[in-house]
Image (cartoon, rainbow, N blue to C red; front, side):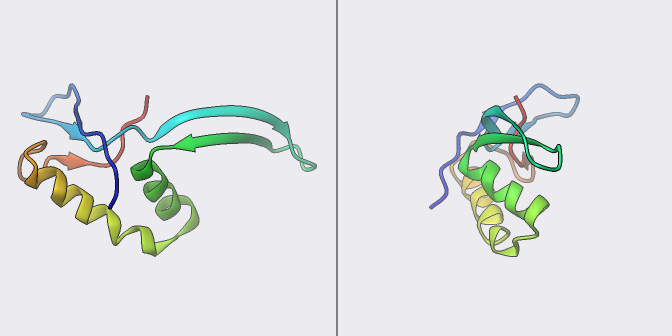
Amino acid sequence: MAHFNPMRIPCRWVDGYTLDYHTISSVYLGDDELGNPQFDTKRSEVGEFLYRLMYRSDLTAVARMPWTSHRCRAEGYCSSTTCSGPARR
């Protein structure tokens, strides 16, 4: 079962909610041998699903996200279709 921390977000729409923050913390570790910056990034569980889907093309993460959004609505955190993905801090 995916853990999430639903919260209301200010927006121009009637109502806006997010399931959780995307990134909890990110620490710069230095550059790799090719000069690319490296980070130690901690993500929320929902943020990790979204990251795996968007940046690793891991389709197994898709199966968890709609269920989590449905649970958010069922528990009364969000109205019908207002649930979105994780928020950025």
